[in-house]
Image (tube, rainbow, N blue to C red; front, side, top):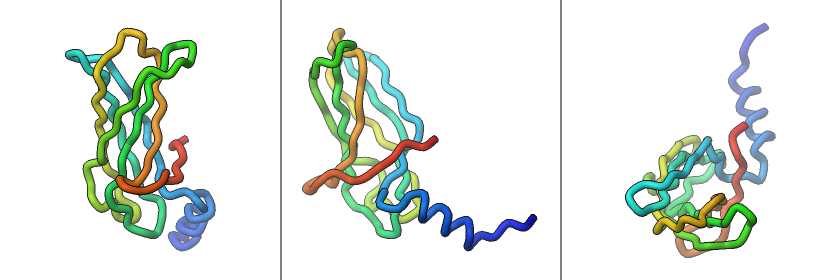
Length: 117
C-alpha cells in the first residue's frame, strides 16, 4: 500500500470543511493570583487569518458564569497549516471550576474551530 500525499490532503480538506482552526489539547491552572490558560491552535483553512483572539470564559462547577478574558494568539497572521501558541491570563477567583474557550478575529466575529481528537 502506498501513501498518496494528494489524497491525504483531500481527506484533510474534507475532514475540516467549514472549519478554520484546530484546537490542540489545552489546559488551565491557578498560579500567582491568576488563572492561566495555555494551548495551541492550527490554521486548517486555505487562507491566512490575522489577529486571532483566544477568548476564555470561566464558570463555577455548577455552570454559573464568573468572568472572561482574552488575548491575541502569538503568530500574526496565522498562515495556512501553521500552529501558534496562545496564553490567556485572568484574575483568579476561587470559585472557578471550569473554563471554555472560543476564537474570534480581533474586530470581527467568531472563527469556526474544532478540537483535535
